[in-house]
Image 1 (cartoon, helix red, strand yellow):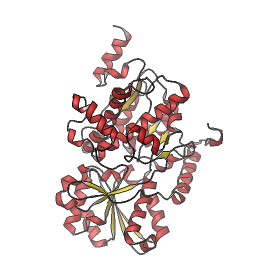
Image 2 (cartoon, rainbow, N blue to C red):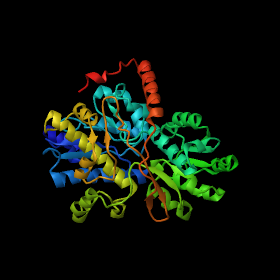
Image 3 (cartoon, rainbow, N blue to C red):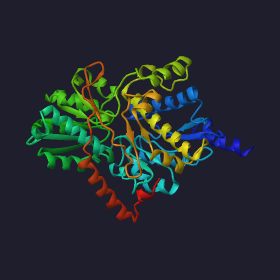
Image 4 (cartoon, helix red, strand yellow):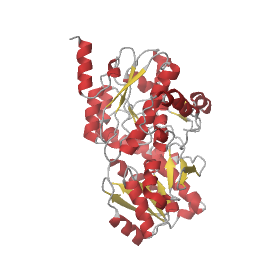
Length: 438
């Protein structure tokens, strides 16, 4: 048996796609979760992500003439499984893994140091470790668009606007109902800083995973009588929280969810109780975007779409997968412009991620203007500081109810740099000099 056939047999044995071993292609691992309590998010995001990759191949012939290939590895949204998938997939393809998108905070924490050693970027779009926005200390982590810390400043600004101004937050009470995990705990420092800055009282209440038991938490919320509830949930925790809010009489139009609590799958199971509920967003719902229309035409009409339920195309989670595809593919294109039109290493793709510049003009060219806002990364800023939108559920669909709300970088960035510097000191890391980076 030839070496190639041996590798192919091994790949099939562990559930990897044969395309992962094709020569001359750019390999993107898909560490998805299609089973388990968080499968609704996983199937939607990775379905949209894979459809966008296949669109680029079908419509454009790949990136710079280089076809894109991928293999899925099921993580079940478990950190240990995600780490196993990382080890399985990091060396595949002609030049190794381009980057990893776990769509889960735990694996990002677990692989921070290993990714630097392996020189493979960890792309955490709208999630993960917020201080990784400081690229001087975290050269291989990219919490693109908006970190959880930044998003929470936009969320408090949105609540302030609803109250008639930020000064009206003084004396208000906000409950932070959060998933008791690394993901859920990530925003505790920034919320405490905002409470101090604006004078509102903060009550943080954890919910053990998966979150289908919340009676005690909502009894506490009823006793606290807050003005607003921030729902930092995930999976079944979200419709459960909305239903419990209705049971104790808390108004859903005073609940604001994180973007992992703001998809159709988070509200439809809650029925009429979800009407009026509000959530932050990385992206809106809808299939009106040219790239999504092209996916429908080129993939779904020919039976090549990734979603088992085509009705989910254009949903919040699906469109978030398109956002993942856009940012990953654009990083490859930018890196190709520097290193050549060939399969690139993770180290080379890292350069592309650090030099993204998505203008309105570029987003229009890609057919996604309005699906995500303009953003730009650099050595110093691995986030891009994109603004946040807010949508409200009317019982049938999500309606955008805000302009793009800017994040409060005057508050966030000093905390990012302070936390990153502390991490660097603990790990003996010498921060990069960004003035020397080109």
